[in-house]
Amino acid sequence: MPLRIDKFIWCVRLTKTRSQATELISKKKVLCNNVHIKAAKEIKAGDILSLQKSNAWFSYRILSLTEKRIGAPLVISFIEDITPEEERQKLKDYLASQRTYQHLGTGKPTKKDRRHIAKFLEGDDNSAVDT
Image 1 (tube, one colour):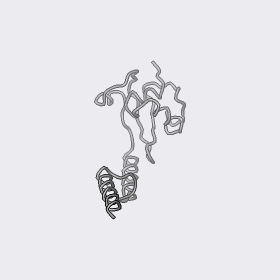
Image 2 (image 1 turned 30 degrees about the vertical axis):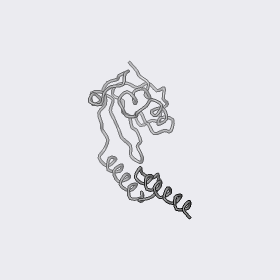
Image 3 (image 1 turned 30 degrees about the horizontal axis):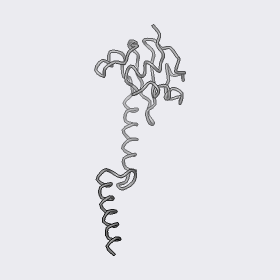
Image 4 (image 1 turned 90 degrees about the vertical axis):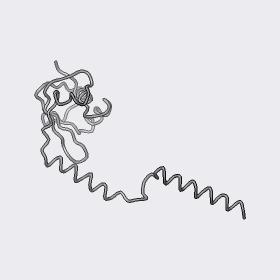
């Protein structure tokens, strides 16, 4: 029973939505048996899927197919994670380096920051009215 690769990626929870799975495939971030494929490619048990997350490639062996999205505890009966440890370490290193570049005070303000800003602006407006 062959199954579309984009649907399978979504069914075994490698992506949150089927459109995300299709987008990964169209951006050539998914390999089936070390070959770039299209979303309509039909897969079968025994195939090797490789997905790129950030700068690391994660590999999975397909054990069996499913047409319906399954719960997280059942995923291990449909795919086997065969990702090398150095790829996992590559992702950990990448995420750690990204955290060092995120400086305090940059980016979107937190809820606490917004309260401080609002309080400051309210105080500023009141002082302008008083003078």
